[in-house]
Image (tube, rainbow, N blue to C red):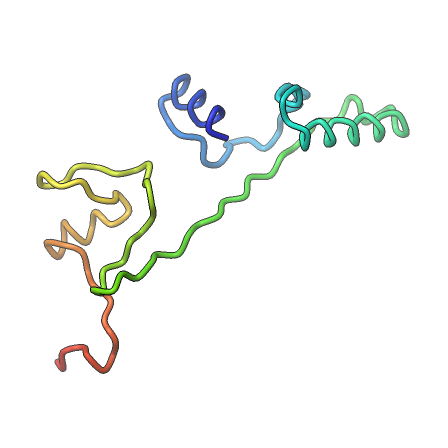
Length: 122
C-alpha cells in the first residue's frame, strides 16, 4: 500500500483514496509477483476463465474499502483525530488536521468533548 500511495502521489500529485472508475484491466495482477494474496486472486481468475472462456474479454472491477478510525479521547477532553495524519496543514502558524480546520477558523481552536454533568449550564 505504501508503494501504491507513493507512486500515485508522485505521478498524480494526490494520494490514492477512492478510484474514479472501478473498472481495471489485467494490470491489476501485475503486483502479484510480490503479493501472495494477489497471486491467489489471479489463480482464481485464471481458473474461472478456463471454465468460462468468454470471461477473458469481460472487464475486471475492484472495490475500494475505506477504514476510518474513530477519534481517541485524551484525558484532558481533546480528541486525537488520527496518528500520522497525511492531510495536516498549517493554519495561523500551527500544524492542524485539515478535517478540523473549521473548528480553528470558526471557533479559534479545537472543540473539546466534556461529560454532560461537567458541561457549563447555558
